[in-house]
Length: 358
Image (cartoon, rainbow, N blue to C red; front, side, top):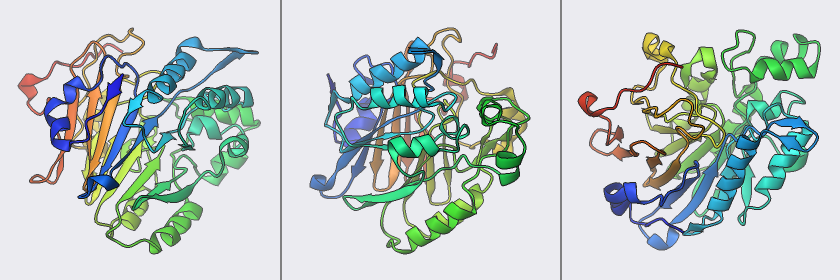
């Protein structure tokens, strides 16, 4: 059903024709090398937010989103070498939610690796997650590329261990979006030391792809689109020639370039988040290259969930976002400008104004 042309030039010229009607955010990532025989792809699904109602009843729209994403991933051509799940499999971190999500993901026909989200973590601090999916952070190599998976949604020990009377209350507090009782996300000292040792073994010319749940940059603290120690992580990645960070969590289209690091978000299979008006009041926290997505209808359940084709060519990421009932968007790395460029929405006069009545 879905054919992704391996040619980067063809992708940039004809990206609008790639989706063939797909409506959920599966990202297909191609690592492109001089020798095409070395090229490979991987798929990316994120932010399912499976929520239990009672017993075997779950919020249907959210688990249906993940079920469809898995089905479409199994139809991909070329077949991806592996699949990444980008975090927030559960909504409140319970065993039934994680079990239900794991059962859905088990239908994938490819090796699957996992990133932890805050909704998966703050009930039991990831204990049940580890039983199902393995360690909270790790790295692996695949066909000449070094991949790093971080748990970027930890926070200060005092907040985590001493503030809340029950684990359930802690989970509910961190699950809220606009919540003054939450605490900023961070990677933390333990993982930073691990990352430093891990990177010490890698040649500086090796392409690096980092998967995190939060952005590894500071975008908007009020909604925790923010990683407290982002600059320290960026400093560890700075010596490498080509670094890409791919993250979920924000349920939005975002992209940015900080030094040698390209940042790209993927959308959710559950629901989209609007862009907060506060973005305009905190320019220093907003990725300067992000253009607000056009909102078709705030009551359309799949608004801003769409197919994403991601091509990592020569260490840089190009994305095609296909949005239901809206104009497709392409974001490609401009070598001359040394930054990602939104091909469709760079001109203010060409943009459809985003809706603001949320």
